[in-house]
Image (cartoon, rainbow, N blue to C red; front, side):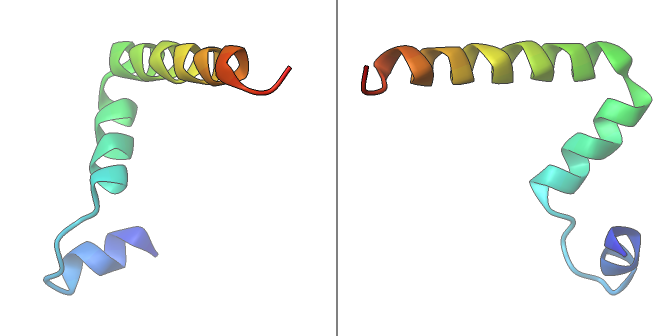
Length: 49
């Protein structure tokens, strides 16, 4: 359904573009996962104990 949105002339969302990049480049996927994991870990550390 996301592909249909791009064909209607609307701008593809950044999330969609990221997904496209991740399918083409596995290294990007790994990097994104590492960054996401780091952010979650930081939020947990900052959160209420």
